[in-house]
Length: 170
Image 1 (cartoon, rainbow, N blue to C red):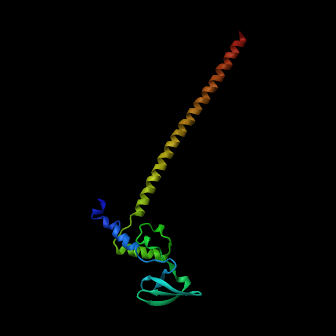
Image 2: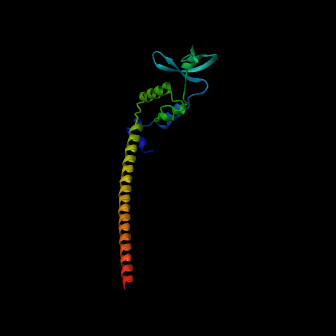
């Protein structure tokens, strides 16, 4: 595509190769998760064993930790890696949002979606105001026409009654 040759394009979107690389990562919705970490906020983990309300997870290079089930947060499928619109995330939790922001920041991908939506919203609002203004103008014209029609009918009734009165006098 032509726009992909634009030097600023790399800051807006990922290339197809990068997207395929991110999406080819191994993923199991029952095992992949996020656990809290003092330094990183949340780290990626793989559930190895569950017993009662505790879960044993493997973090990083084979380090095992035991955590409570309630602190584990679900991980999104790789197709949502560095997504632009986070409202599309399957699991919209703190860890997933933080990871997405961190990954986009590391890849130097900026956000434009919010401003685009604000612009669309402003345009729609302006269109709605224009339509409302036109509707009010048409409504006013209709009311004026109805008033004129009513006064014309009243004049016609008066003329007919006068005509009848003069016809009866003759």
